[in-house]
Length: 378
Length: 227
Image (cartoon, rainbow over all chains, first blue to last red; front, side):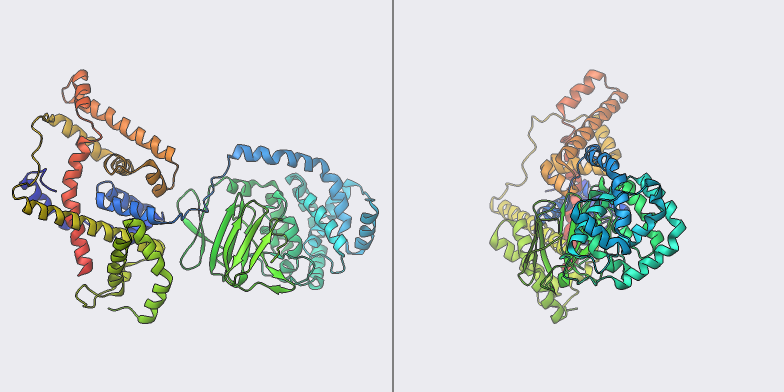
């Protein structure tokens, strides 16, 4: 193999052998999986540029990997996404005022029965828009804690109004938040009261219980059923953030979430997902660095699926998490049938569309949904 | 240090099939894949070829990537090692059997390469970005496809194509500029560039020089691992 060069050159090269070091398989694998630091990557690239053997190793290792990047989704262009939501956003602006008036009174505990009656009769009372800000925080406090005596019809009505509410403009939210400070203490008390009185997450009425992955307070847990409903709308990108037990946190989270500024930016970043051997869910964005997601959850993840901006991740003990904003915020979804929650580890997640998908567990159970995870059939 | 049996059992349970799958994808041959995986098992367990105990290869897994990926890389490295060793031994045996049929003589009609071309090319290659050199070498030397390179680097094929085009074009321009600066006329430089494909000649020289170094140390490293 050295016949093409003089012996003197071969001898000189032979003396340099000891200085030549090949990257370890650990480094080469890190290069293939793009998990190296910038410095390490530069060093390996430098070596690969002149080492045919190591190039062959990384190409063979890369080819042997069975589609490790299935979860990588190339997001549509931002321009298109922006226009896509512009039309419904403008439409919702037009409807915003009437919806606000509607749901403001709807959630007052002493008026729920009356509102339900009005809803059934098809009449919707109106109130002056000027009083909206003063009572808006009360609405916020209640939207996360449905009154336990609400009937299914009332809950449907609540969901409809919540969807409308969350599609308001950011300006409305800011104004509402500012006005809400006047009665913040009252609202906090109302929130606490309702948190105590609210049904547990195992309430049979909502089939799906969504919970902010970061929230652990009873208030946030009690608010779960309605968060699931809110999660249906594209404007609910920040629902993970509004799961905080602090009312002030909710107020701060609402404007940014609705306007979608920070969240919107995140949607345009092409993310890649993987599950490590340790069962950690990790995301990589343009900077080639992997960061652990849902690290606070004591879950050993087994499967992850991405459909557009929806990310589903499942793990042991039937744990299933859902994000509607590309992994910025998460909600836990409980798979249960007849009051019996799923305990088998989630082995695979498959979604044909954003709304239709199935989850298979290690125990052989298959759960299907056709409404983006709102309800599941075993 | 031999591996702990219980840990070894767990390891086998989880990664046995992945190992064979990786070996098959690398070797494209069932028997070779089995032999390849079996030879790696011994190293992973910490047993030498003569049955002596030594440090398990797993000791060198530092977690920069996944364990499954590391195993694939070890399989690939072992395959490259064995493949090259086999090829070299086969070549040597054939040469001995054939008597004097050692290396082919350089074709007499190959025109001598102008030293200025070689020097200019070597200088520009040395100044080239490592990523571009890697792309040029992978595509033009190793004959990797755009799809293979794109998969490795996790970018679109068109991106690789653009980078290759930019790197090759830029390299040609800079070499031409150097040749003119070295005293060639523009026409001479163009002719020299036409006579000698800069994507082949200088890299081939580099390849030839580099091959001896890297191959020797590659064996050395593998030998050290086995020992």
